[in-house]
Length: 97
Image 1 (tube, rainbow, N blue to C red):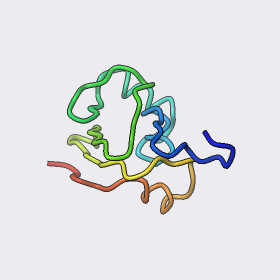
Image 2 (cartoon, rainbow, N blue to C red):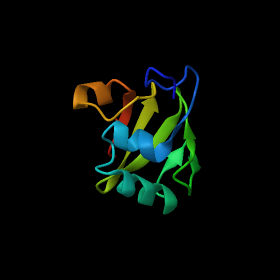
Image 3 (cartoon, one colour):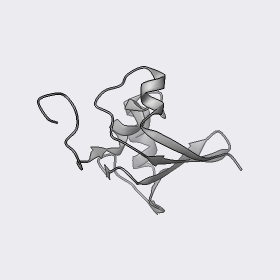
Image 4 (cartoon, one colour):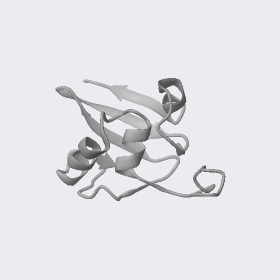
């Protein structure tokens, strides 16, 4: 993180933090569990670690009820802010099937 509290330009963020900061996971521990149990795909590849790096442009597929949710990372958040701020960090590609 830069002194301003923003992630460095072109940097990365742990996937568990990204999911929690953007409110795609209800808690960071839940995001960690999803990653470590292999329920998340990053750019089509299954991940099994919560510290997998996320970059702008990455595609994340995660469970959403009985279906899947696919989002494209547009920017890395600096904090877990309000919902509108969180939603500006990703683009919804697909919800459900």
